[in-house]
Length: 542
Image: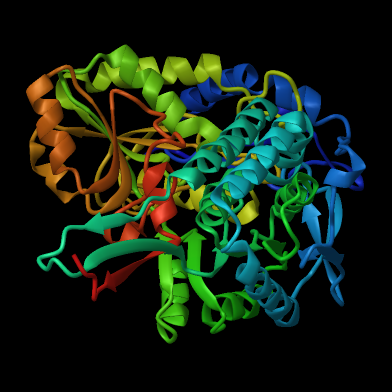
């Protein structure tokens, strides 16, 4: 058995600023499964990986954005409201408090639902062209304030600024897309078997929609849902994640500036403690007709039960364990590039992030070598606002602890650590590459949500029949027949063939079975907020 060698981060002079100044880890970190030589190699890699982190963590950071965008109150019926208490929003890179936000409870949630219900009576009758114009105006304002919106994402989510800019553009693209779809919600005329009647199919908005969003894409997950809802003629109450409410409130400010009427968009931020009671209102109130949720499968099941009593329309984008499959026929360089994009975007914290890497035997060693080299040269840890940073922190300490646990479990079952393996200060985690991974390890059974790449070697395609139902899957092959066969066989909602980044406003996004219900984005995204009403117009005379 290999000896575990402690690595003191003091030796690396890694310093981290919190609100009270520099803090160093109080205990040594272990790189499980590494020999002394392996630790020395890891230190060299750290010195390459962390130049931005070592420099950037020696100073403080401040969120500097235009005052109107940095909102800290709830937004209900066109007004900014305070709650009886507040909760802190922290920079996950430093632990520094960014703001104190109104901690809305069931009373504020009920108030928002009532406001949305009142506004719906007018909004549903608004001309499609008018809804289109307002959504487009909201899009224009988002792009006008792209830099400030990106800074908010970086500071409350930890995402590197360049990625945050990309998220703002991606988020705005849904408002652009649905501003156009608002004018393309068509009904049907069905030919009747009888001469004296016409059969008409009308598409009508379902009503008030509760929008419950995650922290990993604090802007895009809102616009993808809200854009479709407003285009259809629905009104919304948004409950953002407790870690990232500032992005949601900034979007509400821009919605108001765009001229979207009071009550059409409402935002009720709340702390983790109040989330269950607020969620109860949003999922069970009889005035709510639709619930849209993005988050874990476990939480999704709880919300489904709440919504079931009043038989609400529900769409859910849930957790996944996305496979990344590399066949012997693959272009290995292309596969490595796809793996880097798919795995390390937002430090591995995406809903469709590749979680299990299954590489066929003939290209296994070559893939590992090239991927390791790419990680060494392309990944740089640091505060998201620092130029050159590609990997920020995980959202909180619990997220980092989960990754460490999965690494320890894998090593205890025989996996080898080729890159990384250590938790750094705060919630920073070394990008980690594991070899000799097997299917009995936690990292292949659970969603990681962190920068961990577990690579399994396979020779028999039987292993591909046990992948389960997940939101997305990726595979690399140059065999056209194999591509069609595998793309149809994978039990997923989305397939990336020789591509690691496939999200687009024009394409439907969603999972299957326990990984999701319904679709977001695309022309199908609007359908989630519409009812089809059949009108039989009889008694017609020739």
